[in-house]
Image (tube, rainbow, N blue to C red; front, side):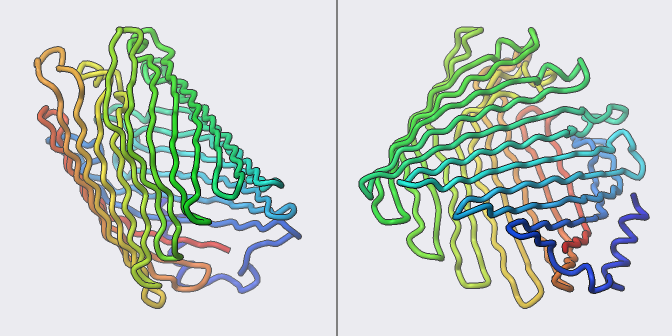
Length: 389
């Protein structure tokens, strides 16, 4: 892995023959292969509160994108990539992640639009402690969206999502789940590319293991919002409403205000600011050790980023703040868990050639919990090179 990474960096400086430049085009089909390689250092491999273990790890990520324009405004997108990562010292943390995507966008007559998508991941969660090993799983997410616009100002939309996660090892299967989501939306178009909407979403989650079935639930969410794209510089979507989640296995209902925002603003032609946020109820993950805290928690998340391009250089800076509040007392301590997570990153890319990019990034993460055993801090430095036809 290290040899491949170093080899790609050498190629970056000495170059490829010009014959490979450019994507492959076959009529309406455009094929773009690529490969990214990186070398990284982390000072806390297992995200522990003390006795942190540091290590170097190396990653190679080859992939391919296929874009097809079969006719009219229809679009088909296919992609696949594989992330192979190897640690110098703690080989139990080595992992390989394979991801495949397919998306079809059909622009039909009379204001109809249909979108189909499917994403499948052969992934891995990193080990929780030294001597543990990665937790392999398969995850699949399929989606169907249909929308119809009528009388110029009104629109209807329908969506269906099917998500599942299935771990390999029996000891990890407590987190296996299947979720089905259906939703509808009524839109009123204020302008051609700006509309308000009223939305309802129903979701049901089932866990396959007996130990986890107390977490089986269904939820109802109703919210209103606005989507705008008034100018080429500012676009976004904001929602606000109410969500109720019923854990029917234990006859418990959790309620919360719901909110989400996704905003992008072009400060100048070279500087873009993004802001994302969400407040909602989430199921407890890594249930084998966290169910004692609560079956669910309310999370408030704010994510901001700023990117600026100057000639061949692109600098970026970002920050996240997350506050998680578990909804029930810990079974042993008799108090509720609270987590505050702060993340920050800064990086710079250099577009050496049209087909090659070099970069360096620093990332910082701090989790501060009222349960000290959950605390951790991590610093990561990453050097990478990306090659694309």
